[in-house]
Structures are given as structure tokens and as C-alpha cells.
Amino acid sequence: MNNTVIAVDPGGSYRLYLTVTTEMVQEAKNIHKTTNLATAALGRVLTGAGLMGLMLKDEDSTLTVQVKGDGPGVEILASADGRGRVKGYIADPDVELPLKADGKLDVGGAVGKGTLTVIKDLKLKEPYLGRIDLVSGEIAEDLAHYFLLSEQQPSSVALGVRIGPDLNVQAAGGMILQVLPGAQEACLDALEERIAALGSLTEHIPRVHSPAELMDRILGDLPPPYRPRVLEERNIRWHCGCSEERMEKALISIGEKDLEQLIREDGGAEIVCQFCLGKYQFDRKKMEALLREARHE
Picture: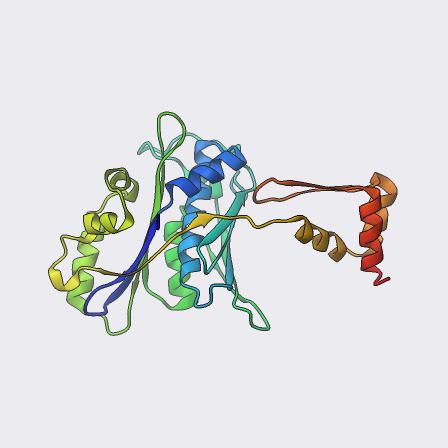
């Protein structure tokens, strides 16, 4: 079932990307064995990256969102493509901090001060790179700041992950609302008022059965001329895509000298995928074959 809607209002004042990513974030939690705090931080970045991936014009284009701070979480990275396939990791999956005064997980504290970097591979000669200083480390506010500064695109961003009493992901999702050129002031005023009264996105997700229903729940009471209409339904999902062939290419890319050292000192190599933690073993015979390939023999 599709878990994402892309919608616009009849007057063309805004475009809405809205997704429910509960299953995807749970899968990431299962793979990386993350604490509640790490799950929330990683889940927000995965969800944001997934929505941004759907904005890419070419399905084969990819983007990477990297959040790097001086907090104990150190780094969170997510990669997405135009097909809605997302993967990611957090440098410290065991990070834990006291809850904030409002009882919420302290994602900003886990991230700390630092930068948010977006790299887009649009299949051109050089990838696009945009980097901003983090505003809060809470991810949604930082992405909104990125859109404004790096893409000159006024946007409202909401990202959330709720952990249930059983320590599993109870709800996860995200919304990116982008103002379009020539937007009607009255429409934007009504939107701003509605979003201010919205509360947490994850409060609404358990009460609906689809992203379209979620859209109606959070924006359906706007005046009729300003209500969003679904243009397209898409699916954001976890997908790593690593393979032995890719790992072979990675080994070849380190060069002859390092390959020779691995063969001499270790008699082989084990590579662990950062995203899915899949392990790939290369014995001496295989390593020697890769060395010959690196030498173009």
C-alpha cells in the first residue's frame, strides 16, 4: 500500500508531501538495534530524506542527507532515490539522554551543534551540495532552514517518531509543505493558522488508515478553496541495495597497495554494510583476484 501523498491546493499556492513511515522506521530500528532516542533521530532523517527523494525529477537520481553535530549521536546519514527507496544509519545507535522538560525525546541534544548537508546526484558532471549550520538539531526545523537558504524555497517541515510502551515504533511520519510562486496570502494565512494548531503529527497517525485520510484530518477543515487535492500517491520504504558486487568494487577502489596489505596481514577481508549491517567475506583467493583486477591484469 502506498504510504505517501503529493497534493496541491486548487489555487496553486502550495504543494504538500505527506507520509506515514511507521513500518520503515521500525525496520531501521530492528536492523540497527537503536535506543528510543536514536530511533527518533534516525527516523526523522530517514523520513525527511524519503520525502526529498520524491522531489527528484529523475527516479534514478539520489540524494544524501547528513546531519553532523558535536552531540553524542555524532552523525546521522540517510540516502534516498526518486523511487522512494531509503536507507540510513546513526553513528551511535546506543545514544541515550534524559527526556526534555516536556517529556519528549531530546533529539536536538543527541545531535548538538553542527551542520546539515544535502548532496544530490542528478546524473550530471558534478553533484549538487548544499550545507547549512544546524538551527536546533531537531531535524525538521533544520530542513526547513535548508530549503529556505540553499534552495530559496519557503517550506514548513514536520517530522515525528513516537515510541510505544513496548519500545516499538508506534507512529512515524513527515510533512513538507512548500509555498509556490504567486501564492495567495489568504491561503497562506489559513495554512499558517492550521499548522500552528496541528500539534504533533504522530498524535494523528495512529488514528488514520492512510496518508490521504491523514491529510484530510490535518488540513481538511481549511476553507474549500485552500484544501489540498491529491495529485499522486507514492511509497517510501527501506531498501539497502548492497551486494557482493558493490563490495568488490569498493575493495578495488582502495587501490593496489591497500589490497596487498590486507592480503599480507589478514589473508582476506570482511566488509560490513553501514546501512543494513550485512556482512561480506572475501578470502585470500578472492582478494588476489580483486588485486589482479585492480592492476588491470
